[in-house]
Length: 416
Image 1 (cartoon, one colour):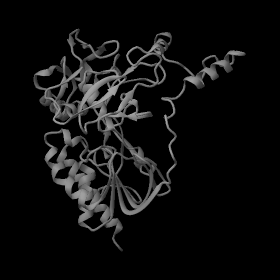
Image 2: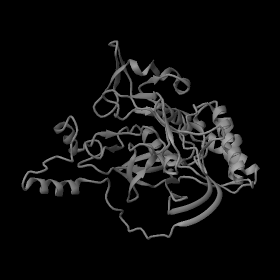
Image 3: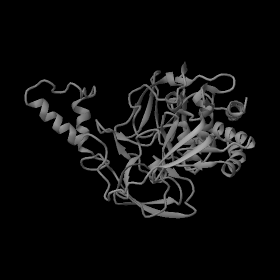
Image 4: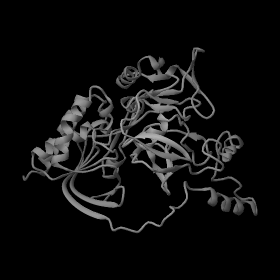
C-alpha cells in the first residue's frame, strides 16, 4: 500500500506478528508498519472487518494492537525504539485471516445486539454468556500494572491542544507572565501544521518559546473535565489539573465519505497522507484525492505524480476492495485503480472537552463547533480557539485565533 522513497537514517527493528519490520528510530510504529507494506493492522470490534490507520493521530481504531504484552495501544502514537513485539488482537486466526469475519457475512446489515435472541427461552441467556466472552478488545496485560497515585497540579491556564492555535495562545500568555500547562496527544508540538508547507515555519517559530515557558505534557489526553478539574491520561499515569482558566484548542476530526467501502484500509485523511509523505512514505500503487480546498491541494502537491485522480466528494460512488483499497468508482462510471484514497472533505470540529466544561455548540458544516464571543470566550472560565471553534485550517487564521483567546484570558485573570 505504501513504500519508502528513502531508507531510514537510523534504522531499528521490531516484530509484527513474528515478521521483522525495519523502522526509523522514533517514528510511530504504525507509520513503520505502513511503510513496510502492511495495510491491515487491526479488526473492527463487532463485525471484524479489516482496519488500517485513517488518521495517524489517535482518533480512529485502525492501528490498535498489543505491544510488548500490553493491549489496546494506539500504535500511531507509540514511537519506535527497537525491539518491540507487536501482535494483533481481537482476532480468531490471524490479522489477515480473521475467522470471526464470518459475522460480517451473516449480518450484512449489521447486528442489533440489543434484541438478538431476546425473549427466546434458554437462548437469550446463552447468547448473553457468549456475548460477554466476545465483548471487549484485547486481553489483559501479561504483567499486572502497579497502581500509581494520580499527580495533581494547579495553574493559571490549561491549554488543551498543541496545534498552531494552542501554541500561539501559550506564547501570548507567557508574555503576560501567566503559569501555563499545555496538553497534547501527539509526540511533538504543532499538530497538523507540521505536515503543511505553509505551517511548518510557524511551528518552528512558536515551538521553542512554548517549551521554554510552559509545562508541556505530550502523548497525553484530556479525557474529561469535572467540576473545574481536567483528568489527563499520561503514558504512565493519570494527572489531575485544576486551572483557573481552560483554553480548548483541540482541532477537528477528519471527514468521512458516505459510500460503500469507506472503512477499507487505505482510506485515510489527507492530513495523515501528508504526514506520511513528509517522511518519504508514499502510496505504492497511486492515490485518489477526494475533496476540495487547502488540504486537497496540499496532498496533491505532496504526492505529485502518484495522484491518479482528484475528484469531489459528490463524484464518488464507491471504493473497491475486500480487505484493502483496490480502486475508486465514480458516479459517471469511471474507475481508477489505486491503493490509497486521501479524503479532504469537510472536517468536524472537536468540541467535546469544551462542551463538558460548559461551553455551548452551534451547527456548522461538518458538525458542531464551540460558540465563542469576540474574545474567544465560550463560558465562564472557558475559552476556545482554532478549528474546534469553527476556524478554517489557515495557519495565519489559527495563530490569530489563539492570540485572540489569549488576550481574552489575560483580561479575565486581571484584577478588576
